[in-house]
View (tube, rainbow, N blue to C red):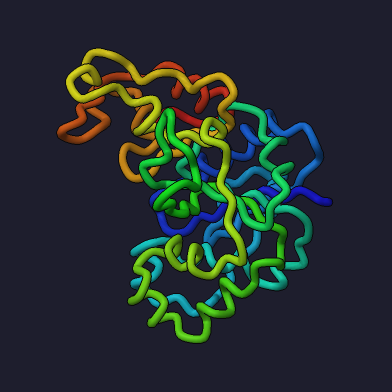
Length: 259
């Protein structure tokens, strides 16, 4: 089965560096052949080996583009630009820290992050009140089309009912499995130091065996690689100063250090 890595970028929150760094990091950590696809409204300065397609128009209102990530539902189209095979969707605010092949080998119709309190060291994804996170998920292209078709029957009702697209996905996916706990880890919950210590101690490096570090909300990866000193987190967390392992990741994968 063909392997396809999909990302999506719209607006100006994430520049082309985010896509290019992600592409280069995937190339370094995915042994089997794959296609890298970016769905975007702006393809300027993207790596020439990235396959670029417009974000499909699925009926999102301007509010849906700003609150939640409803345009993501377009990847569940029954025909997504003729793509086929197993897809791994990866958000922009993500760091690739280990091999990705195993994420393609999970034999389940739909695999996602459990973003509940189970997404912590010692937790058990999928237990109790599990919450689907759509930052990193895998599925067979064209095989979860009901997620999109049900949304398109009444997009505004879906938005008003669920607020976030990941809540809608949890309601409409045919079945849901979750990544093993230490494969996709949260920067905030696994690597950021406790309040008080975060002023003096840099975040921990990604754990051995982890494949992806997810940066949900703030801080975003770019905050940790800026060339100027200062706080990159917000009260009560007060992360401070440069983060060498994050800067190394960014520059080794072709990213420029922002001013």
